[in-house]
Image (cartoon, rainbow, N blue to C red; front, side, top):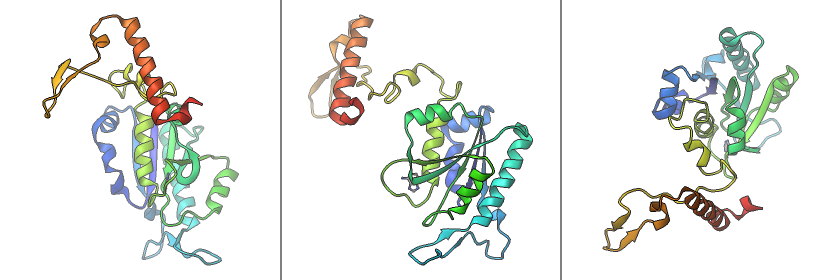
Length: 240
Ligand code: ADE
């Protein structure tokens, strides 16, 4: 998979050099490139924003650098992937569709994603119209019902959720099957050794004995029950 990120804060994406995603990049499972939007400006101050037409608070991102950035990054990507390959362009945006595990599953099948990180109050609406007009597939994705200062943190989260689903990125593929949200439920509680643990208050805490029974069918049934109970308590909306 190829991923391009366009941002005015390239350093913000440096955590993507670490851990599983960093290793996936080094192993060539993901080709991830970060681009500075300001490299597509032409004035001395490398301006990417201006005041909103019609008045109002804050600043709006100008359309010209974005249109040039998409053209430049699209050309770079098509040089390596082929002229017939088109990216999915994702704008993290609190007014977008909720990003869920199902979205992560879908996007993990993409050959190429370009993330466009907005800042300030947002991006000039004509950028979206332009991309739709030239036939680009565009998605607005929200991490949740709260407002961040820009799209960068959302790109970190979305990229991690998507890339870990690419075969070979997570060592044990089975761990992807049982985790929270993979079947629409929250994951069951986990225990490890010691089976009997005395906590710092001196209280003896035993792991559920069924987990030591060796009866795999019973363990699976118990876990399913726990998942349902936990989902009902913490996320009743998921059960409906
Ligand atoms: N940018 C600002 N807030 C956001 C959110 N909640 N989700 C995605 N992108 C955002």
